Image (cartoon, one colour):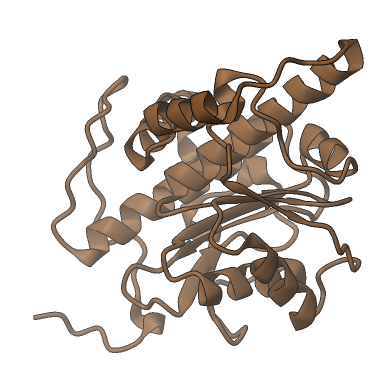
Length: 271
């Protein structure tokens, strides 16, 4: 019988499982909430390393969150002031939806709290959300539109994007976070005009992969529009391509080679 009574009692080192084999696309089964939490925390820390690998870190900006699988009104997030390339499992903060830091010795980025707490509260189906000031994402956001389905990869975002066009400055207050969550609606992703990208998922793997892919699609469309008038895939074909390549299972699987990469490059994220 478990003795845990509060989130303060969580031991993030409990539930460690062997790492998956390189190239494996079979999810590792978890038997209890400790194993599920630990597995997802490892994916969260790995995602920060990947974001650094792709150059998504920008000063103090950027955050990825994970809803705790047991205490659903709590989420894990990166601390303020720690570069993505240095994030480890032990660095992660556990924050309650009212802003109280339950675990972790460092402060939280206020924008991370106001944006992500609003999203997790408004969307019970979202267990992870990612936002960063990536160069192509924030550049594309200045155009005030969503991605067009001009490639097979971009078709994955067909009718899965919203546009938040009412930029109100740095999200240092509750209202801005709630407006972003409202604009996201029931979509997987959002383009925050004059700001950057926001992606969500039922797992960290999906939210992180969507962000990486979306930023590349922004780069692709910026290049295509600079060169000429890109041909847009028709709606019916775009929807078909999305159903083929945009399922949660495919999105999850797409993240696995990147997890293998970062595990080989910097396995200390597990610390």
